[in-house]
Amino acid sequence: MSHYALITGAAGALGTVVSQVFAAHGWELFLFDISDELLKTNFPMAYTQSVDLTNFAAVQAAVSVLPHPPDAVLNIAGGFSMQVAEEATTEDVQHLMAINFHTLFNTVTAVLPYMVERKSGFIAGVSAGAGLHGGAGMALYSASKAAVWLYLRSLAQELKPSGIRVSTIFPMGAIDTPGNRVAMPRTDPKTWIDPHRIAETLHFLATSDSRGHIQEVQIEVAG
Image (cartoon, rainbow, N blue to C red; front, side, top):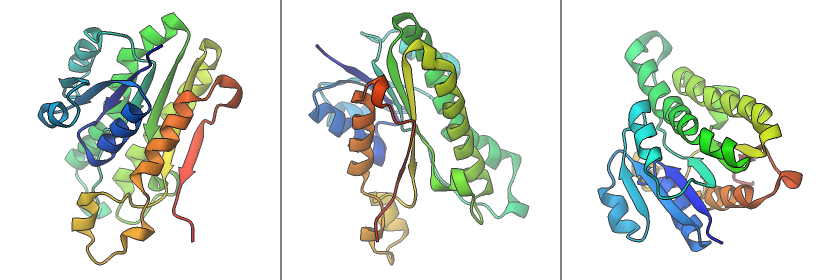
């Protein structure tokens, strides 16, 4: 029996790894990103769509034409930036909330009716250590990632009677991506989180049943 995973931000560094891991485990992939050109190249067997995930109508339209309702929705789309608090603007707030929270809210809201009808499904999102503890220069980023966490925590309680499982992943530090290696050339990548560990954790959560469900997972580098 086939399993279907909808992955947002699938063309990004973490989204690519998550897509690769789920494909390796035999899942059928529905991949969304702002452009699907790279997705078509990297995942020729997957169903891909170019979608503005910050636009609810666009997400709803994209979900409505999927060839099969997804069994798992993995909300990987997001981004990071820092601002000194006294220099932060309303545009900064809107941007970070749009890419980190609205992308998740729009996708979950569009998919949820199908999962509720089937009384099954798995939803996951990516928060951050800053979403739990904050950080200097990261007030807006932290707020957007805290919104991800608390939305999903509340959603988990609401949907539990429906048989729909919800989990939040917290990378407790930098993720080892090509972009981070360029941005922080003097930092040892061995102190960063392996994106494959995040992807494998998401797969474990997606395949766990309700009797062993884990709602929140913090991932960090030991030592």
